[in-house]
Image (cartoon, rainbow, N blue to C red; front, side, top):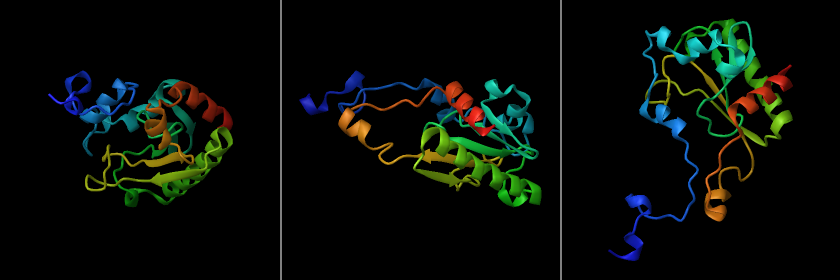
Length: 179
């Protein structure tokens, strides 16, 4: 076997990168706990409001919607704004829900800037299977903080994939700043 065909741990082509394993993401990759639109009892976004804030990673609770850290973040501080009501589509929101989702999204951006000096944001709602929604049954607005070079240089120059701050610590910092 040629040297370039030798694989790391017997699988795939070697890429010279260090690995920081994130086995907690397997539940996400496998699609576990993705409820059907009829199954509110199995919906994580319906269960979270019934948990203590620390356990559910809730940053703020509003009247019709709440803000929660993403359990599988794209970046440290990745928040989601979720209506309490189990609805799948943005067009299903009431006037009050749509207004509060917008207001909480704006506040999330302000808080993330103050806590982490975020330089930009990705905002979005993935609607339906074709739209890439991981949990299609319960509407949620992503608020992903971004920084220049935040995901570019570590694998290339540092030969390392980074791990974000622990979720509990991030939740505490954001919840304190929200108040």
